Image (cartoon, rainbow, N blue to C red; front, side):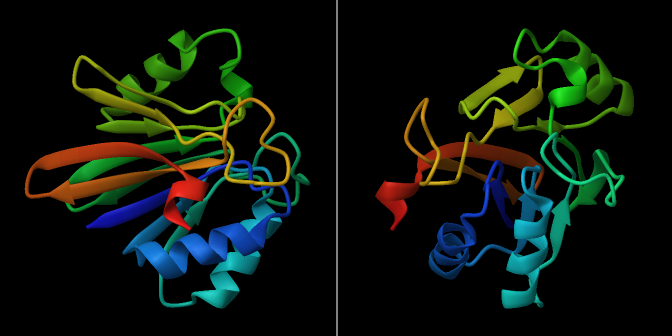
Amino acid sequence: MKILVLSDSHNDVKTMRLLVEKIEPDCIFHLGDLITDALELKQSFPNTPLHCVRGNCDDPFYDRFEQLISLNGKLFYITHGDRFGVKTGLTSLLKRAEGFGANAVLFGHTHRPLLKNENGLWVMNPGCVSRQISAHAAASYGIVEISGSEIACKLHTVDSAL
């Protein structure tokens, strides 16, 4: 199973559509900012499951700021990250994910890609997928692949994919 992980699209639905067409994921996670972009993406790919959470720039009409998603026997905790102060540290975010027994925690907010494994817990920030506002680094996204009992996570730049 291949999961496309996107965050901080900030009105760049075009880039997300191009990535979905190229990667052909089995599932998409959108980690907020802007959730309306995720809902628009869902209209273009109605047969691809999409899970999303709201970010700090999203209207409060969508009140889900975190989700636990079980796929192929693996548990994913997704959130935007702003409620956990991820710009200054990951301690509270990691405690929350570990408390749920998650295999991976996926978050955004900082616009900076991050990938590491903390004692068996995958930690991924795919960075900012928007090519319009990616000021800190190249626009980026993540891929999570589940094969048997294994999870493999990778970060990619948008320009290298398109």
